[in-house]
Length: 197
Image 1 (tube, one colour):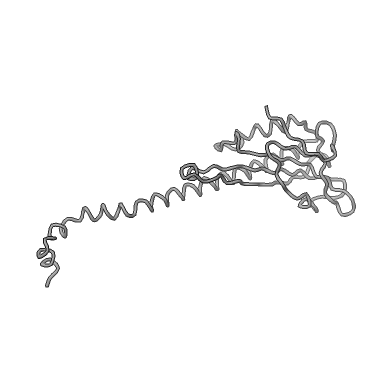
Image 2: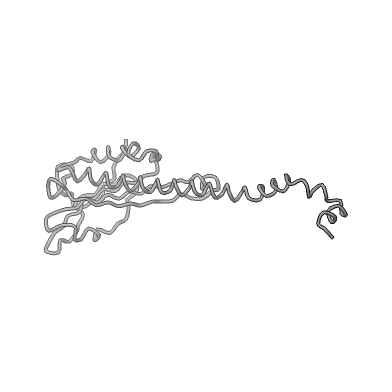
């Protein structure tokens, strides 16, 4: 028995000749997966962009601080406020923490110790021993750590949480062995929180 006679026998001949409904049904089955795939591609692109911007900002701040011989706490405040422009198009208004530390190297082994530390937002935990070997006795290293809380379009839609990206950059002072803050090269290593106005 031929295929066309089977369709005629059961009254299905009109469905065998009309393929429009099949294409619509196939699209309806595939569309959600395609939409989800496209949203995932956009999401990954935005995440990579946010990670790159946070990394770039950390390196730029470390470089700017290392170029100076003396800074003030207000200068660091201005660098934090500049993140709105430096990390465009990301919104850093409430989503960015900045931790700037001057690490001194002392002794034969150039052991690291904190000279001064300024934090905007929440302090970022990092091991100062990572600076070991970055200089000789009497020198220092500037460490800048950044935490950016990335809020995803998908997590906003589906009720997920944000993703915290932490980036750290080191830079050696260019003009002097140590960068002084508020007139002194060290304040005993105490953590001071910036007052953002």
